[in-house]
Length: 512
Image 1: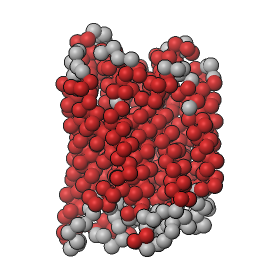
Image 2: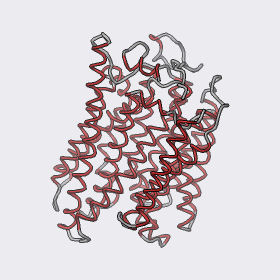
Image 3: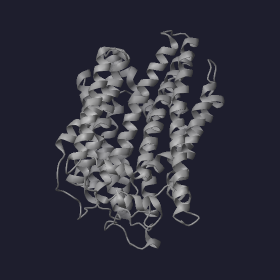
Image 4: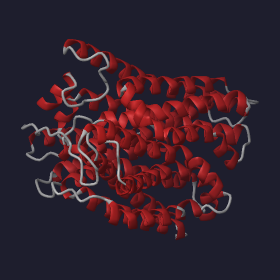
Protein backbone atom coordinates (compact mmCIF):
# COMPACT_ATOMS: atom_id res chain seq x y z
CA UNK A 1 0.00 0.00 0.00
CA UNK A 2 1.41 3.36 -0.96
CA UNK A 3 1.74 5.96 1.73
CA UNK A 4 0.03 9.32 1.48
CA UNK A 5 2.28 12.35 1.08
CA UNK A 6 2.62 14.62 4.05
CA UNK A 7 1.90 18.31 3.59
CA UNK A 8 2.01 21.06 6.15
CA UNK A 9 -1.54 22.45 6.28
CA UNK A 10 -1.91 25.81 4.63
CA UNK A 11 -4.14 28.68 5.66
CA UNK A 12 -6.96 29.93 3.52
CA UNK A 13 -7.37 33.39 2.11
CA UNK A 14 -9.34 34.33 5.20
CA UNK A 15 -6.22 34.58 7.33
CA UNK A 16 -4.58 37.96 7.48
CA UNK A 17 -0.97 36.83 7.52
CA UNK A 18 1.16 33.74 7.23
CA UNK A 19 3.78 34.86 9.72
CA UNK A 20 3.78 33.14 13.12
CA UNK A 21 3.40 36.43 14.92
CA UNK A 22 0.22 37.26 13.05
CA UNK A 23 -1.42 33.84 13.02
CA UNK A 24 -3.79 34.81 15.82
CA UNK A 25 -4.86 38.09 14.22
CA UNK A 26 -8.13 37.10 12.60
CA UNK A 27 -10.39 39.13 10.36
CA UNK A 28 -14.13 39.58 11.11
CA UNK A 29 -14.88 37.31 8.14
CA UNK A 30 -12.71 34.56 9.59
CA UNK A 31 -14.44 34.89 12.97
CA UNK A 32 -17.81 34.70 11.21
CA UNK A 33 -16.87 31.48 9.42
CA UNK A 34 -15.72 29.93 12.69
CA UNK A 35 -18.98 30.93 14.42
CA UNK A 36 -21.00 29.28 11.63
CA UNK A 37 -19.05 26.04 12.00
CA UNK A 38 -19.39 26.19 15.79
CA UNK A 39 -23.17 26.65 15.50
CA UNK A 40 -23.46 23.50 13.39
CA UNK A 41 -21.43 21.41 15.83
CA UNK A 42 -23.38 22.83 18.77
CA UNK A 43 -26.62 21.65 17.15
CA UNK A 44 -25.17 18.23 16.34
CA UNK A 45 -24.02 17.68 19.92
CA UNK A 46 -27.18 19.20 21.37
CA UNK A 47 -29.33 16.65 19.57
CA UNK A 48 -27.38 13.75 21.06
CA UNK A 49 -28.51 14.58 24.60
CA UNK A 50 -31.50 16.90 24.24
CA UNK A 51 -34.17 14.35 23.37
CA UNK A 52 -33.62 12.30 26.55
CA UNK A 53 -35.69 14.50 28.87
CA UNK A 54 -38.56 14.66 26.36
CA UNK A 55 -38.93 10.88 25.94
CA UNK A 56 -41.75 10.37 28.50
CA UNK A 57 -43.80 13.14 26.87
CA UNK A 58 -43.12 11.76 23.39
CA UNK A 59 -44.18 8.28 24.44
CA UNK A 60 -47.45 9.51 25.94
CA UNK A 61 -48.27 11.73 22.99
CA UNK A 62 -47.52 9.22 20.22
CA UNK A 63 -48.50 6.08 22.18
CA UNK A 64 -45.06 4.50 21.81
CA UNK A 65 -43.93 1.46 23.75
CA UNK A 66 -40.68 1.51 25.70
CA UNK A 67 -38.83 -0.46 23.00
CA UNK A 68 -40.12 1.84 20.27
CA UNK A 69 -39.29 4.90 22.32
CA UNK A 70 -35.68 3.75 22.61
CA UNK A 71 -35.34 4.14 18.87
CA UNK A 72 -36.04 7.86 19.08
CA UNK A 73 -32.58 8.01 20.67
CA UNK A 74 -30.98 5.05 18.91
CA UNK A 75 -32.10 6.22 15.47
CA UNK A 76 -30.01 9.36 15.80
CA UNK A 77 -27.01 7.44 17.15
CA UNK A 78 -27.25 4.91 14.31
CA UNK A 79 -27.24 7.62 11.67
CA UNK A 80 -24.55 9.70 13.36
CA UNK A 81 -22.13 7.05 14.56
CA UNK A 82 -22.59 4.69 11.65
CA UNK A 83 -21.99 7.19 8.86
CA UNK A 84 -19.28 9.44 10.30
CA UNK A 85 -16.42 7.72 8.47
CA UNK A 86 -18.28 7.99 5.20
CA UNK A 87 -19.02 11.65 6.00
CA UNK A 88 -15.37 12.42 6.63
CA UNK A 89 -14.28 10.75 3.42
CA UNK A 90 -17.01 12.48 1.42
CA UNK A 91 -15.74 15.83 2.69
CA UNK A 92 -12.24 15.00 1.43
CA UNK A 93 -13.38 13.79 -1.99
CA UNK A 94 -16.42 15.92 -2.82
CA UNK A 95 -15.36 19.21 -1.23
CA UNK A 96 -15.71 20.19 2.42
CA UNK A 97 -17.75 23.34 1.85
CA UNK A 98 -20.18 21.58 -0.50
CA UNK A 99 -20.72 18.64 1.85
CA UNK A 100 -21.19 20.93 4.84
CA UNK A 101 -23.82 23.10 3.12
CA UNK A 102 -25.87 20.18 1.79
CA UNK A 103 -25.77 18.29 5.08
CA UNK A 104 -26.74 21.37 7.10
CA UNK A 105 -29.78 21.92 4.85
CA UNK A 106 -30.83 18.27 5.34
CA UNK A 107 -30.36 18.67 9.11
CA UNK A 108 -32.77 21.62 9.16
CA UNK A 109 -35.34 19.72 7.07
CA UNK A 110 -35.12 16.62 9.27
CA UNK A 111 -35.53 18.77 12.40
CA UNK A 112 -38.69 20.31 10.97
CA UNK A 113 -40.05 16.88 10.01
CA UNK A 114 -39.43 15.53 13.51
CA UNK A 115 -41.30 18.43 15.06
CA UNK A 116 -44.49 18.07 13.00
CA UNK A 117 -44.99 14.31 12.53
CA UNK A 118 -47.60 12.44 14.55
CA UNK A 119 -46.41 8.91 13.76
CA UNK A 120 -43.74 7.11 15.75
CA UNK A 121 -42.20 5.45 12.70
CA UNK A 122 -41.84 8.76 10.87
CA UNK A 123 -40.31 10.34 13.96
CA UNK A 124 -37.69 7.59 14.19
CA UNK A 125 -36.97 7.95 10.46
CA UNK A 126 -36.55 11.72 10.91
CA UNK A 127 -34.15 11.09 13.78
CA UNK A 128 -32.07 8.71 11.65
CA UNK A 129 -31.97 11.23 8.80
CA UNK A 130 -30.96 13.94 11.25
CA UNK A 131 -28.15 11.81 12.66
CA UNK A 132 -26.98 10.95 9.16
CA UNK A 133 -26.79 14.63 8.20
CA UNK A 134 -24.83 15.37 11.38
CA UNK A 135 -22.41 12.62 10.36
CA UNK A 136 -21.52 14.77 7.35
CA UNK A 137 -21.58 18.26 8.91
CA UNK A 138 -19.32 17.40 11.87
CA UNK A 139 -16.25 16.05 10.00
CA UNK A 140 -16.70 18.56 7.16
CA UNK A 141 -16.73 21.45 9.64
CA UNK A 142 -13.71 20.16 11.53
CA UNK A 143 -11.70 19.59 8.35
CA UNK A 144 -12.60 23.11 7.11
CA UNK A 145 -11.05 24.46 10.29
CA UNK A 146 -7.93 22.30 10.11
CA UNK A 147 -7.29 23.31 6.49
CA UNK A 148 -8.15 26.98 7.02
CA UNK A 149 -6.02 27.64 10.11
CA UNK A 150 -2.29 26.84 10.00
CA UNK A 151 -1.10 24.19 12.43
CA UNK A 152 0.07 25.75 15.68
CA UNK A 153 -1.40 28.47 17.91
CA UNK A 154 -3.98 29.63 15.35
CA UNK A 155 -5.38 26.16 14.75
CA UNK A 156 -5.29 25.27 18.44
CA UNK A 157 -7.29 28.36 19.29
CA UNK A 158 -9.85 27.67 16.55
CA UNK A 159 -10.19 24.00 17.44
CA UNK A 160 -10.50 24.78 21.14
CA UNK A 161 -13.39 27.17 20.48
CA UNK A 162 -14.99 24.77 18.00
CA UNK A 163 -14.80 21.63 20.14
CA UNK A 164 -15.78 23.49 23.29
CA UNK A 165 -18.97 24.56 21.52
CA UNK A 166 -19.63 20.89 20.78
CA UNK A 167 -18.97 19.92 24.38
CA UNK A 168 -21.22 22.75 25.55
CA UNK A 169 -24.02 21.58 23.29
CA UNK A 170 -23.73 18.05 24.62
CA UNK A 171 -23.58 19.20 28.25
CA UNK A 172 -26.36 21.77 27.97
CA UNK A 173 -28.70 19.48 26.04
CA UNK A 174 -30.51 18.25 29.12
CA UNK A 175 -30.92 21.78 30.49
CA UNK A 176 -32.34 23.15 27.25
CA UNK A 177 -34.52 20.07 26.82
CA UNK A 178 -35.96 20.51 30.29
CA UNK A 179 -36.96 24.08 29.48
CA UNK A 180 -38.45 23.22 26.09
CA UNK A 181 -40.26 20.08 27.28
CA UNK A 182 -42.07 22.13 29.91
CA UNK A 183 -43.63 24.03 26.97
CA UNK A 184 -44.08 21.04 24.64
CA UNK A 185 -41.90 18.16 23.47
CA UNK A 186 -42.14 19.20 19.81
CA UNK A 187 -40.07 22.29 20.58
CA UNK A 188 -37.05 20.08 21.25
CA UNK A 189 -37.18 19.20 17.55
CA UNK A 190 -38.28 22.58 16.18
CA UNK A 191 -35.80 24.77 18.07
CA UNK A 192 -32.78 23.78 15.89
CA UNK A 193 -34.60 24.67 12.63
CA UNK A 194 -34.18 28.47 12.64
CA UNK A 195 -30.66 28.19 14.04
CA UNK A 196 -29.64 25.78 11.28
CA UNK A 197 -31.22 27.96 8.57
CA UNK A 198 -29.49 31.12 9.83
CA UNK A 199 -26.17 29.22 9.96
CA UNK A 200 -26.78 28.00 6.41
CA UNK A 201 -27.34 31.53 5.07
CA UNK A 202 -24.15 32.83 6.66
CA UNK A 203 -22.21 29.72 5.62
CA UNK A 204 -22.96 30.44 1.96
CA UNK A 205 -21.33 33.85 2.35
CA UNK A 206 -18.52 33.20 4.80
CA UNK A 207 -17.08 29.74 4.34
CA UNK A 208 -13.89 29.74 2.28
CA UNK A 209 -13.56 27.99 -1.04
CA UNK A 210 -10.30 26.09 -0.93
CA UNK A 211 -8.78 26.16 -4.41
CA UNK A 212 -6.80 22.99 -3.80
CA UNK A 213 -9.61 20.90 -2.40
CA UNK A 214 -9.60 17.43 -3.78
CA UNK A 215 -12.81 16.83 -5.73
CA UNK A 216 -11.72 13.84 -7.78
CA UNK A 217 -10.11 10.50 -7.10
CA UNK A 218 -11.04 6.95 -6.32
CA UNK A 219 -14.17 5.98 -4.44
CA UNK A 220 -13.88 2.97 -2.19
CA UNK A 221 -17.44 1.75 -2.64
CA UNK A 222 -16.81 -1.71 -1.18
CA UNK A 223 -15.04 -0.22 1.82
CA UNK A 224 -17.83 2.29 2.36
CA UNK A 225 -20.48 -0.46 2.28
CA UNK A 226 -18.68 -2.93 4.56
CA UNK A 227 -17.34 -0.30 6.98
CA UNK A 228 -20.61 1.56 7.36
CA UNK A 229 -22.62 -1.66 7.54
CA UNK A 230 -20.39 -3.07 10.29
CA UNK A 231 -20.74 0.10 12.39
CA UNK A 232 -24.51 0.31 11.86
CA UNK A 233 -24.95 -3.35 12.74
CA UNK A 234 -22.72 -3.00 15.81
CA UNK A 235 -24.74 -0.07 17.17
CA UNK A 236 -28.00 -1.84 16.32
CA UNK A 237 -26.85 -5.02 18.09
CA UNK A 238 -25.80 -3.35 21.33
CA UNK A 239 -28.94 -1.22 21.51
CA UNK A 240 -31.20 -4.26 20.94
CA UNK A 241 -29.22 -6.73 23.03
CA UNK A 242 -30.93 -5.67 26.25
CA UNK A 243 -34.33 -6.63 24.87
CA UNK A 244 -33.25 -9.71 22.90
CA UNK A 245 -30.78 -10.98 25.50
CA UNK A 246 -26.99 -10.81 25.31
CA UNK A 247 -26.76 -14.61 24.96
CA UNK A 248 -29.61 -14.90 22.46
CA UNK A 249 -29.07 -16.40 19.02
CA UNK A 250 -29.97 -13.07 17.39
CA UNK A 251 -27.40 -11.11 19.39
CA UNK A 252 -24.63 -13.66 18.91
CA UNK A 253 -25.41 -13.96 15.19
CA UNK A 254 -25.34 -10.18 14.80
CA UNK A 255 -21.98 -9.93 16.58
CA UNK A 256 -20.56 -12.63 14.31
CA UNK A 257 -21.81 -10.66 11.30
CA UNK A 258 -20.15 -7.52 12.71
CA UNK A 259 -16.82 -9.37 12.96
CA UNK A 260 -17.14 -10.72 9.41
CA UNK A 261 -18.01 -7.29 7.98
CA UNK A 262 -15.22 -5.66 9.98
CA UNK A 263 -12.66 -8.20 8.75
CA UNK A 264 -13.85 -7.69 5.16
CA UNK A 265 -13.51 -3.93 5.60
CA UNK A 266 -9.92 -4.21 6.87
CA UNK A 267 -9.00 -6.54 4.02
CA UNK A 268 -10.48 -4.17 1.45
CA UNK A 269 -8.71 -1.15 2.94
CA UNK A 270 -5.35 -2.93 2.71
CA UNK A 271 -5.78 -3.81 -0.95
CA UNK A 272 -7.68 -0.95 -2.58
CA UNK A 273 -5.85 1.89 -4.30
CA UNK A 274 -8.10 4.57 -2.76
CA UNK A 275 -9.13 3.33 0.70
CA UNK A 276 -11.95 4.85 2.73
CA UNK A 277 -9.64 4.67 5.76
CA UNK A 278 -5.90 4.67 5.17
CA UNK A 279 -4.91 2.36 8.01
CA UNK A 280 -1.44 3.87 8.14
CA UNK A 281 -2.94 6.97 9.77
CA UNK A 282 -2.95 5.05 13.05
CA UNK A 283 0.84 4.83 12.99
CA UNK A 284 0.70 8.39 14.21
CA UNK A 285 0.69 7.76 17.95
CA UNK A 286 -1.14 10.98 18.73
CA UNK A 287 -4.01 10.06 16.39
CA UNK A 288 -4.30 6.49 17.69
CA UNK A 289 -4.26 7.43 21.38
CA UNK A 290 -6.72 10.29 20.91
CA UNK A 291 -9.21 7.94 19.22
CA UNK A 292 -8.96 5.28 21.92
CA UNK A 293 -9.27 7.84 24.71
CA UNK A 294 -12.22 9.57 23.00
CA UNK A 295 -13.99 6.22 22.57
CA UNK A 296 -13.83 5.21 26.23
CA UNK A 297 -14.17 8.60 27.92
CA UNK A 298 -17.14 9.82 25.89
CA UNK A 299 -18.74 6.43 26.36
CA UNK A 300 -18.26 6.66 30.11
CA UNK A 301 -19.93 10.07 30.16
CA UNK A 302 -22.95 8.75 28.23
CA UNK A 303 -23.33 5.95 30.77
CA UNK A 304 -22.92 8.34 33.70
CA UNK A 305 -25.46 10.79 32.33
CA UNK A 306 -27.98 7.97 31.90
CA UNK A 307 -27.49 6.81 35.51
CA UNK A 308 -27.81 10.35 36.87
CA UNK A 309 -31.02 10.97 34.89
CA UNK A 310 -32.62 7.84 36.33
CA UNK A 311 -31.34 8.46 39.85
CA UNK A 312 -32.46 12.07 40.13
CA UNK A 313 -35.88 11.58 38.54
CA UNK A 314 -36.89 8.09 39.64
CA UNK A 315 -35.27 7.77 43.05
CA UNK A 316 -35.08 11.36 44.31
CA UNK A 317 -38.23 12.48 42.48
CA UNK A 318 -36.74 15.55 40.78
CA UNK A 319 -38.52 17.05 37.80
CA UNK A 320 -36.94 17.11 34.35
CA UNK A 321 -36.27 20.83 34.70
CA UNK A 322 -34.66 20.39 38.13
CA UNK A 323 -32.44 17.66 36.75
CA UNK A 324 -31.41 19.83 33.84
CA UNK A 325 -30.35 22.65 36.14
CA UNK A 326 -28.51 20.16 38.36
CA UNK A 327 -26.26 19.32 35.40
CA UNK A 328 -25.83 22.98 34.44
CA UNK A 329 -22.53 23.58 36.35
CA UNK A 330 -20.65 21.11 34.13
CA UNK A 331 -21.99 22.66 30.93
CA UNK A 332 -21.38 26.19 32.18
CA UNK A 333 -17.74 25.43 33.00
CA UNK A 334 -17.21 24.00 29.52
CA UNK A 335 -18.82 27.01 27.84
CA UNK A 336 -16.98 29.60 29.93
CA UNK A 337 -13.60 27.95 29.33
CA UNK A 338 -13.81 28.14 25.54
CA UNK A 339 -12.11 31.51 25.22
CA UNK A 340 -9.02 30.34 27.14
CA UNK A 341 -8.61 26.75 25.97
CA UNK A 342 -6.51 27.66 22.94
CA UNK A 343 -3.96 29.48 25.09
CA UNK A 344 -3.99 26.65 27.64
CA UNK A 345 -3.30 24.07 24.92
CA UNK A 346 -0.46 26.21 23.54
CA UNK A 347 1.13 26.51 26.96
CA UNK A 348 0.78 22.99 28.31
CA UNK A 349 0.20 20.80 25.24
CA UNK A 350 -2.43 18.14 24.65
CA UNK A 351 -0.11 15.49 26.07
CA UNK A 352 -0.54 16.98 29.53
CA UNK A 353 -4.15 18.12 29.24
CA UNK A 354 -5.56 14.77 28.07
CA UNK A 355 -4.55 12.82 31.20
CA UNK A 356 -5.54 15.75 33.44
CA UNK A 357 -8.99 15.87 31.86
CA UNK A 358 -9.34 12.10 32.16
CA UNK A 359 -8.32 12.21 35.83
CA UNK A 360 -10.86 14.92 36.64
CA UNK A 361 -13.65 12.86 35.09
CA UNK A 362 -12.59 9.68 36.92
CA UNK A 363 -12.69 11.59 40.21
CA UNK A 364 -16.10 13.06 39.34
CA UNK A 365 -17.55 9.61 38.72
CA UNK A 366 -15.95 8.17 41.85
CA UNK A 367 -17.39 10.94 44.06
CA UNK A 368 -20.88 10.08 42.83
CA UNK A 369 -20.53 6.61 44.34
CA UNK A 370 -21.58 8.24 47.63
CA UNK A 371 -25.19 8.41 46.38
CA UNK A 372 -28.00 7.29 48.69
CA UNK A 373 -31.75 7.74 49.02
CA UNK A 374 -31.44 11.21 50.59
CA UNK A 375 -28.54 12.83 48.70
CA UNK A 376 -28.56 16.59 48.19
CA UNK A 377 -27.40 18.73 45.30
CA UNK A 378 -24.67 20.50 47.26
CA UNK A 379 -23.23 17.38 48.88
CA UNK A 380 -23.37 14.92 45.98
CA UNK A 381 -24.24 16.42 42.60
CA UNK A 382 -22.34 19.71 42.61
CA UNK A 383 -18.82 18.35 43.36
CA UNK A 384 -19.12 15.77 40.59
CA UNK A 385 -20.50 18.30 38.10
CA UNK A 386 -17.62 20.69 38.78
CA UNK A 387 -15.02 17.98 38.25
CA UNK A 388 -16.76 16.71 35.11
CA UNK A 389 -16.98 20.23 33.72
CA UNK A 390 -13.25 20.73 34.25
CA UNK A 391 -12.46 17.32 32.80
CA UNK A 392 -14.67 17.81 29.75
CA UNK A 393 -13.23 21.27 29.09
CA UNK A 394 -9.67 19.94 29.17
CA UNK A 395 -10.22 16.64 27.38
CA UNK A 396 -12.65 17.35 24.53
CA UNK A 397 -10.72 20.08 22.66
CA UNK A 398 -7.40 18.38 23.34
CA UNK A 399 -8.61 15.07 21.91
CA UNK A 400 -9.79 16.72 18.70
CA UNK A 401 -6.51 18.61 18.32
CA UNK A 402 -4.40 15.52 18.98
CA UNK A 403 -6.52 13.47 16.56
CA UNK A 404 -5.92 15.84 13.62
CA UNK A 405 -2.40 17.18 14.15
CA UNK A 406 0.28 15.87 11.82
CA UNK A 407 -2.33 14.73 9.27
CA UNK A 408 -2.14 15.89 5.66
CA UNK A 409 -4.77 18.33 4.36
CA UNK A 410 -6.36 15.74 2.07
CA UNK A 411 -6.97 13.44 5.05
CA UNK A 412 -8.29 15.96 7.56
CA UNK A 413 -11.85 14.83 6.87
CA UNK A 414 -10.82 11.24 7.54
CA UNK A 415 -9.05 12.16 10.78
CA UNK A 416 -11.97 14.22 12.08
CA UNK A 417 -14.43 11.51 11.03
CA UNK A 418 -12.42 8.89 12.90
CA UNK A 419 -12.39 10.73 16.23
CA UNK A 420 -16.08 11.62 15.99
CA UNK A 421 -16.90 8.02 15.10
CA UNK A 422 -14.94 6.84 18.14
CA UNK A 423 -16.98 9.16 20.36
CA UNK A 424 -20.38 8.13 19.00
CA UNK A 425 -19.71 4.39 18.91
CA UNK A 426 -18.28 4.69 22.42
CA UNK A 427 -21.51 6.39 23.48
CA UNK A 428 -23.64 3.56 22.12
CA UNK A 429 -21.53 0.64 23.35
CA UNK A 430 -20.83 1.85 26.88
CA UNK A 431 -24.43 3.00 27.33
CA UNK A 432 -25.71 -0.41 26.28
CA UNK A 433 -23.42 -2.20 28.73
CA UNK A 434 -24.31 0.29 31.48
CA UNK A 435 -28.01 -0.41 30.95
CA UNK A 436 -27.39 -4.15 31.24
CA UNK A 437 -25.45 -3.64 34.49
CA UNK A 438 -28.23 -1.50 35.96
CA UNK A 439 -30.84 -4.13 35.17
CA UNK A 440 -28.73 -6.97 36.55
CA UNK A 441 -27.89 -5.06 39.72
CA UNK A 442 -31.49 -4.17 40.55
CA UNK A 443 -32.75 -7.73 39.80
CA UNK A 444 -35.89 -6.17 38.34
CA UNK A 445 -36.82 -4.41 41.59
CA UNK A 446 -38.25 -0.91 41.65
CA UNK A 447 -37.80 0.02 45.31
CA UNK A 448 -35.21 2.58 46.44
CA UNK A 449 -32.68 -0.01 47.62
CA UNK A 450 -33.10 -2.11 44.49
CA UNK A 451 -32.43 0.96 42.36
CA UNK A 452 -29.32 1.83 44.36
CA UNK A 453 -28.10 -1.75 43.92
CA UNK A 454 -28.19 -1.15 40.18
CA UNK A 455 -26.78 2.37 40.16
CA UNK A 456 -23.62 1.62 42.14
CA UNK A 457 -22.33 -1.18 39.84
CA UNK A 458 -23.16 1.07 36.89
CA UNK A 459 -21.10 3.88 38.39
CA UNK A 460 -18.22 1.48 39.04
CA UNK A 461 -18.40 0.47 35.38
CA UNK A 462 -18.22 4.00 34.00
CA UNK A 463 -15.41 4.86 36.44
CA UNK A 464 -13.43 1.82 35.29
CA UNK A 465 -14.01 2.70 31.63
CA UNK A 466 -12.78 6.24 32.25
CA UNK A 467 -9.66 4.82 33.93
CA UNK A 468 -8.76 3.24 30.58
CA UNK A 469 -8.65 6.73 29.05
CA UNK A 470 -6.43 7.92 31.91
CA UNK A 471 -3.99 5.04 31.39
CA UNK A 472 -3.88 5.52 27.61
CA UNK A 473 -3.32 9.28 27.74
CA UNK A 474 -0.83 9.15 30.62
CA UNK A 475 1.23 6.44 28.92
CA UNK A 476 1.16 8.47 25.72
CA UNK A 477 2.55 11.49 27.54
CA UNK A 478 5.37 9.36 28.97
CA UNK A 479 6.20 7.89 25.55
CA UNK A 480 6.26 11.31 23.91
CA UNK A 481 8.45 12.64 26.69
CA UNK A 482 10.96 9.87 26.08
CA UNK A 483 10.92 10.53 22.34
CA UNK A 484 11.52 14.21 23.00
CA UNK A 485 14.53 13.44 25.17
CA UNK A 486 15.89 11.00 22.59
CA UNK A 487 15.46 13.56 19.81
CA UNK A 488 17.16 16.26 21.93
CA UNK A 489 13.98 18.36 21.91
CA UNK A 490 13.78 21.73 23.60
CA UNK A 491 12.74 21.68 27.32
CA UNK A 492 9.28 23.06 26.68
CA UNK A 493 8.50 20.48 24.01
CA UNK A 494 4.76 20.08 23.56
CA UNK A 495 4.54 16.33 23.61
CA UNK A 496 0.85 16.21 22.76
CA UNK A 497 1.17 17.91 19.37
CA UNK A 498 2.93 17.23 16.10
CA UNK A 499 4.37 20.52 14.85
CA UNK A 500 6.86 21.11 12.05
CA UNK A 501 10.28 20.00 13.27
CA UNK A 502 8.95 19.36 16.79
CA UNK A 503 10.28 15.87 17.39
CA UNK A 504 9.80 12.21 16.76
CA UNK A 505 6.04 12.25 16.19
CA UNK A 506 6.59 14.62 13.28
CA UNK A 507 9.16 12.28 11.74
CA UNK A 508 6.82 9.37 12.23
CA UNK A 509 3.94 11.22 10.59
CA UNK A 510 6.14 11.94 7.53
CA UNK A 511 6.99 8.28 7.17
CA UNK A 512 3.38 7.07 7.31
